[in-house]
Image 1: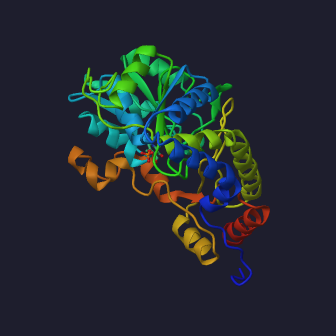
Image 2: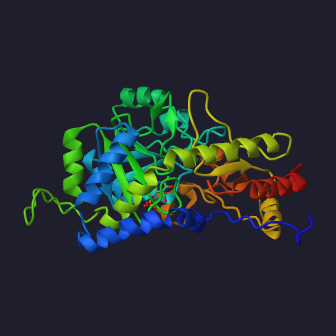
Image 3: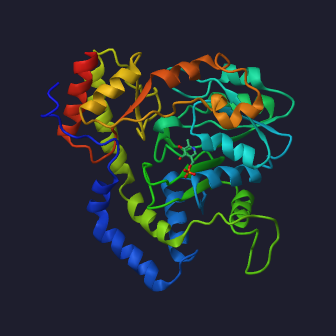
Length: 373
Ligand SMILES: Cc1ncc(COP(=O)(O)O)c(C=O)c1O
């Protein structure tokens, strides 16, 4: 390709979105600053109500990050030392880390090569008398069909805690991820489909007792100032982030629609190449937090795209059971979870955000077709 003519396509461009929202966001931030209500208060309560109603859950509890959402959800589910929790080997590190941080042990399962989701056959093999919970991850924004997971969990008496950090607004059978009534954990890390301008997260649930406990846990176990009924932590959602999230939530469906449109265009163009585009589940949705393709020549393709000004990512290059941090669990190395290991070598995340222009999409497609057409 003629690099001199190629258009820069950053992997992610958060500035474009901020520019479009700046007047609204700046006003909302100024309002919080002038109210001096920096922790809690109306902006947090409003966002929690708006997010719960958007998702279709009875409660949304704002917390400080997706990681704290997972940690608090595990605590509410009473998972702790001596317990094992099934976690897919191809998630972001935090899914497993949260399990470790409540004193339990993550047990990694292999994944399905087409959906990238947790594989229940593998999970079945990992069950022991200590298994207490399973964390399906709606990875990359692709809603996971939880009917089989629910049967599996019921058969083994497991709690299901959903990791929806990448799946805001995604649906399965017309039900928004998080509306199941179970504990569902969201991250609003800046690059997410619904991203704050700092760290933030939420847990949704339909259970009033669990919602109450989550509110206590995120704020030092405190139902009222200087009363502490349980031992919690500080994992509150801050007011400025909540005000920003309320504004951005109004745009989420439109942004997801744009992501889907870009994805459809790229998938159609790549259909005849040696690169495998992601699929959309029958009966389900994909909100393309990440647009992840597979290529047997992943590293070469990545270098080629980089040389042509196109940013890419790998989510994630090391399956969780092979990370340095989890060597303590004694996995025998490569071969233990073959599908996750194979995927880690072939996956490539292409630029994907609502603000991608047609020219940028064309440039990305042209470069890939030139390499792999
Ligand atoms: C699948 C998944 N789980 C958990 C997290 C943790 O969220 P956070 O970065 O907000 O702590 C993330 C995001 O980074 C994620 O992608």
